[in-house]
Image 1 (cartoon, one colour):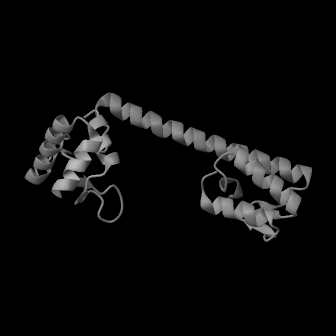
Image 2 (cartoon, rainbow, N blue to C red):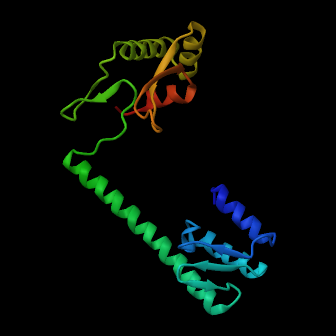
Image 3 (cartoon, rainbow, N blue to C red):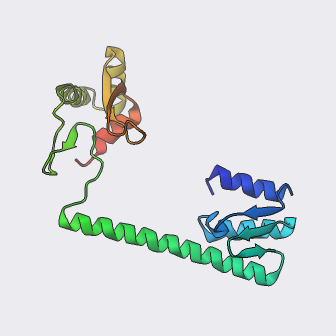
Length: 185
């Protein structure tokens, strides 16, 4: 239960601040049966009702609680099936050689879908400097320290947002150095 919104809901219900939990499909509030049943238990203790597109439920009543429990279990099963289908699709693409994964900085896909060195000469030079520094220092920490001492910047591609895929330059961080060193590509 790492979702702040869900945790706030559970806390508010537990404090008696909520009279009715509303939602189109309330069983989707929780991502697991454990979380869903915990919410039902707290709603039952606090006298909080649950309303979705199918009706109004009182978790303190056995039949309503049974139905809500089934809805939660079905929702969790649906997520499992969807996840399995997505993974199956990825595996099928991989077996056909069509699966494109996010490449580490310094590599890009060409027009034919092959993996090639980034055509940006500054990126190539930064990577050459990185690996030469690593060979000299023998550690990721030493490489990061050397980059910092020399005021060298390191490239990365934005993974999300409106500028997704754009190249940005910044200080080399230890975690990024480890990812570059451990990346199988």
